[in-house]
Image (cartoon, rainbow, N blue to C red; front, side, top):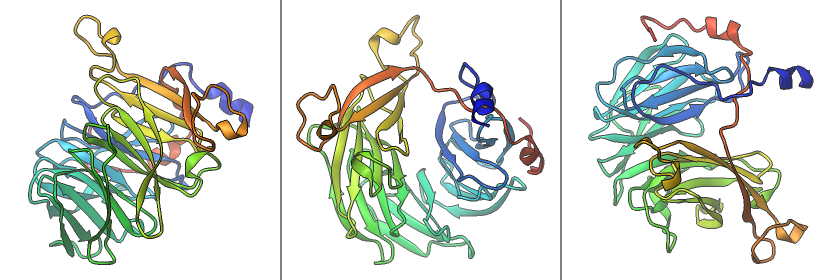
Length: 335
């Protein structure tokens, strides 16, 4: 089976046509009986659902009248939530492709997410508020929490805490169970830029986040963050990326030792030819010097250093779920 899977992997990245403007956010489901799926938000106002291995288009969620800055999918791939510049947050049925509910965002919505138990939707943006809505009883927010700055990214942790990242590069932690009480605030000295990505890290097999935590892209840096039971934030490791302007997105492997990161505009002066900036993906390996790893530049014992990068986009796996794609009958959706 492994040999067949290896033979099926294409030798070039899979291109997923459809969007006409930049993609703002991508979110994958868990592995479901039907396969893996992902939703992509875009400035073209048309969030799209795709099969997670082949990238095949399944349908478009039609209804937003402004750029879709955030798009998230629940674990079972049955619902999606999107946030837009049209001041709205929308809940979608990912089986039928129809809108289930709409919520007033108050201003441009830059970030949305499901709570870990998926009973609520959390949104934020230019309104400088954390807004919490009930999935089962759509309507006005069940909780509104003032935020000192514009929210750029959100992440909901298994503990029930919610992390925010803002345009100034500050990360904050809130407890919704405590009525939106702020638990901590973190701004790393020497790192300038807004938070472009913020994701929850499940416990890894190794590396600095064996108990889980957060992964944040701030300016040119990727931060691996520990989160205590009390909601306190601390930097477990930081990676200065090759990008001159910013790193847009990052993800950590289950082994805890490999981080993939990507960036675009002005990624490197050497990559711009004919006025067109290239897109780059880098794979960074973290080495534990205490375990005899090579290449570390005299780090402290037990810490991790990014010692190698490799350019190139890893290929997606081959299509394996055509039957499950057909089961999702979107209403009135065309590519």
